[in-house]
Length: 373
Image 1 (cartoon, one colour):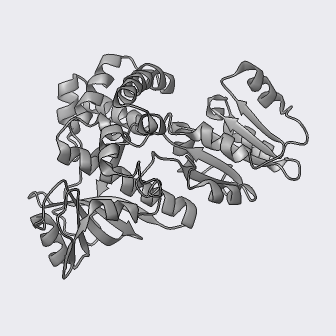
Image 2 (spheres, rainbow, N blue to C red; image 1 turned 135 degrees about the vertical axis):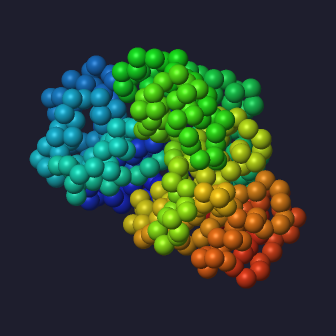
Image 3 (cartoon, rainbow, N blue to C red; image 1 turned 180 degrees about the vertical axis):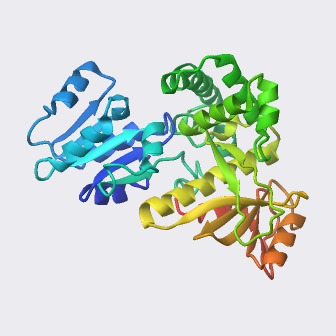
């Protein structure tokens, strides 16, 4: 299935290095090879393969290469300076595409010698907006049951999707986490992982997680950071600019793969909406140069709105997720009236859309399909 970012990536390759970052098994390598089909003399090199590793170190790819794809390059010591040198001394007509996961995305947010030399594209799981033209697949139930990762989403059966997920979790814990950082207590990080699966949509209490996992708060925070760096979870932080001091500061956690969530349909639908909004924000910023951010609203007294889209520290829209409710949520009403915000309640099973003043009741299917990617 064609990914919607291809055209923008092809455009960006003519100007700078392009990084494609995202979760494990989200389709980065497939996308890179699909892009390679647009070139006459592309070269794909994977640093995990010994023969390719020698070619990379010696820079001995064919002279007529017009697209150089470097996969897993972050495993090479000093890879940042290496790719800077390759780019600065490249032959005329050579484009460079680098794919990877956590380390590349973490680097994208830091300043260093590659500043000004690259564009980054975050490749996230499929969304309703991305596959809306495929009517047989474009339904919310499928996303909630299978998630948006290509293999389980397109699998022939639910059984195949479940088998993929079991192997995926095992690979994340046993391979990715251990390769990413030296972990002394694998059992403890598994416990943190399981606690987070049951905490979706709730403000995180690191002290509580640390106590349940039998580790210090510092270690629990480190483990949560590792899970986030590996694109297993993502945190959404509260918006506080121009809103009173009573706002709660703790972040909420969501999973890139919705079926990992342990909870009722409300928690799973909220997670699906969170992933879709994050993809909308990431793609808008990566492809359009926007400055969107995804936050949430919650006071210490318990008034809450699940999400808010912001630009340049200003709230554009407050968004509440409901699996099946026609009445506008009290928290959404309070925030929107107090701070004159635009409010949208996105409902999974909505009988009739409504609009009244600052508030809209919107069908989830339509809302999600109208997001950017």
